[in-house]
Amino acid sequence: MDDLQQLLIASGVVERITKDVMLYTNDIVDMQDKIQMMKEKGKEKHDIMKQEEILEETIQMIPESQSRLETAVLELSTILDHFVSGDIPPGAEQQIEKSQQILNEGMELLDSWSGS
Image 1 (cartoon, helix red, strand yellow):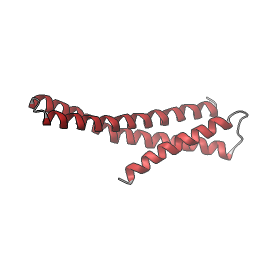
Image 2 (cartoon, rainbow, N blue to C red):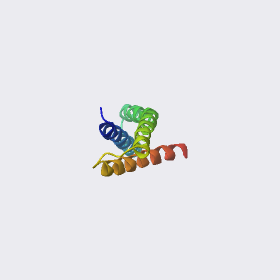
Image 3 (cartoon, rainbow, N blue to C red):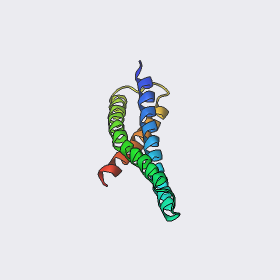
Image 4 (cartoon, helix red, strand yellow):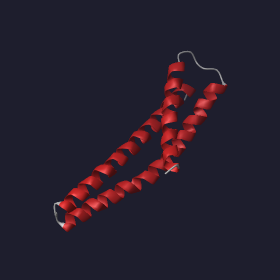
C-alpha cells in the first residue's frame, strides 16, 4: 500500500472516530434531558430506569472511543511526519493539508478530555 493511500485511510479513521465521539456526546445530553423530562412528567419508573441504562451504556462508549482516537491520532501523526520529512508526491499537497486539519481536530478533542 502506498503512503498516500495510508494517509487517506488514517485520516478517514480519525475523522470517523471524532464524529462518533461528537455524536455520543450529543446523545448523552439529549438522553439526560429526556430522562429529566420523564421524571418531571411522572412517567413509569421502569421506563425511566431503562433510559438511564441506555444513558450509562452511551457514557461507557466515551473511554473506548478516546482510546481508539488516541491510537488513530498517533498513527496519522506518524504518517504525516513521514510526508513532511520526505518527498511529497505530486498532487498530494491538498490531501496532506486536509489530513493535518483532521489530525488537529482529533488532537483538540483529546486535549479537551485531558483538560476536563
